[in-house]
Amino acid sequence: MGKIKRKRILTGDRPTGPLHLGHFVGSLQSRVKLQDSCDQFVMLADTQALTDNADNPEKIKKAVLQVAMDYLSVGIDPKKTTILIQSAIPELAELNLYFLNLVTLARLQRNPTIKDEMKQKGYGTNVPVGFLTYPISQAADITIFKADLVPVGADQLPILEQVNEIVRKFNKTYGRGKKILVECKGYFSKTSRLPGIDGKGKASKSLNNAIFLSDSKKEVERKVMTMYTDPKHIHIQDHGKIKGNIVFDYLDAFDTDKKELKKIKAHYQKGGLGDVEVKKRLIKVLEDLLTPIRARRKELEKNPEKVMKILEQGTRKAREVAKETMVEVRKAMRINYF
Ligand code: TRP
Image 1 (cartoon, rainbow, N blue to C red):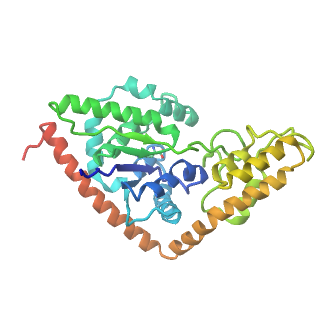
Image 2: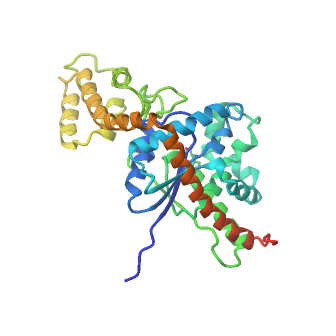
Image 3: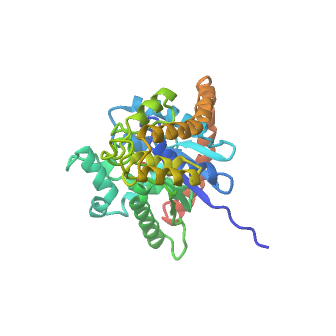
């Protein structure tokens, strides 16, 4: 019987601050699950974070440690997953440079994710070149590890499409019929887009509408209590709406007792169930999830040197893989001089 090749995963986050529940349902949960059956690399994409934070490297550095602690406290296991720091692998910068020649400016400007982010940040034409081209550097991140599976939030799909275009172009231009680099597939979880507590779009740090994995119990309670529900559900006996009701979106994402949840929804729709009751259930569900995560974080916070050691070892291992790919890349491009 032939051996089935394990899938190779590369994924990551821009370290700009602590991770929240949107990250948890969008990608962290998948990573914890996939690390048992796949060969997984998770990147702290600090170089990418600098593309729109060039003036604040201190913030990014601080967030690297925070996000690493988020990873470890949700159960990403450094024995199974290689965690690495992007900026510490210079081969990524080299591959990015070669890829820059394979993409046109017009194609970059058409990328819907970039378009949205540019609008959000109000860049206009004064966009930093590094920011505009980050999908290209992300192509280097993924391909240098020959990843075929990328667990990310749904907003990253246009980036992955562009990555695969670059792979095809590279192979066609330099491969002489051989596939030097591999195309990747996205891996999207059921809830790949969690709304913010204000109901005004997705949960995000910059919109200040997210519940963080590192939030205290009190903070979680406070945030759930302010959550947007059905504005027409004023009296307990009124009919309540589920659609667009953020409390139910969160229960759908986190409550594991689906049978009970169905009953609660029916009761709420019929009338006779108050918002506070439903919110209390959500608080309980979130606390069951977050309590062990908080406990692990507390342990890690006592020993940040140990976390840095994990990152150092992971980065060293990842760099070896990156170096091997670059030997093949330079050879294919015929720039292997010595
Ligand atoms: N762009 C991703 C984000 O916004 C972070 C990231 C950088 C990434 N490099 C990656 C994700 C490679 C997947 C694969 O969070």
